[in-house]
Image (cartoon, rainbow, N blue to C red; front, side, top):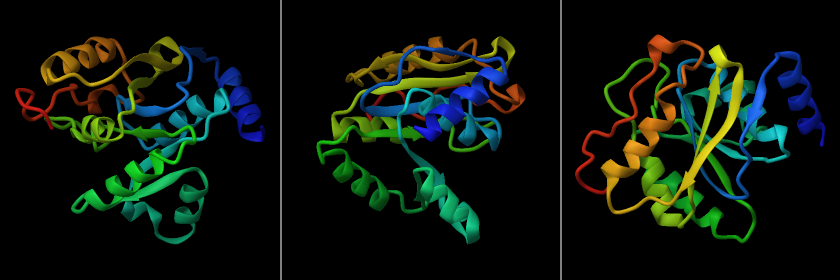
Length: 189
C-alpha cells in the first residue's frame, strides 16, 4: 500500500498519465531501455496499480548495499554468461500458483545495440505466461502498458507487433534505443 501511494504521488507530481492496466500475471517487456532510471520508472508503473514484480538486473549491480535494495524491490541477479540457471528458477517460481510478473529489458543494455535479446520469448514459452509490452515515454508524458499476447510460432509476426507498439515510444535518451528486432527472426528462440 505504501509503494502504491508513493508511486501514484510521484507519477502525479511528475505530470505523467498512466495508460493501460497492469496484467495479473506475465512477462513484461519494458522498452525503450535507454537509462539507469528505467528500473525506477518500471517499478513506478507496476507499483501504481499495486503490483509487485520481479525484475531481471545484471548481477554486477548486486554488490554492496545496492544489492540489498535491488532484492528488496524485486530484483533478480542475472549472470548474462549463464542465464539458464536463473531462467529455470523463474520458470519454477512462476508455477507456484501466485500472480507472477517479471519485467525484462529485452534490449539488454542502456546503449544502442543491433538486436534485442530473445529471452522474453523463451521465458514466455516455457512458463505459458503472456507477454505484455510496458513503456515510459517522456515526450508524451505517458507510461504504462500496451498489448498482451502469447508468442506464436511466427517470431517475425510477434516482433512486428512489438515494433509497431514501440515505434513511437522514445525513452529517456532516445538516441540509445535499440530497434525491436532479434538476431534471427526466422526461427523460434
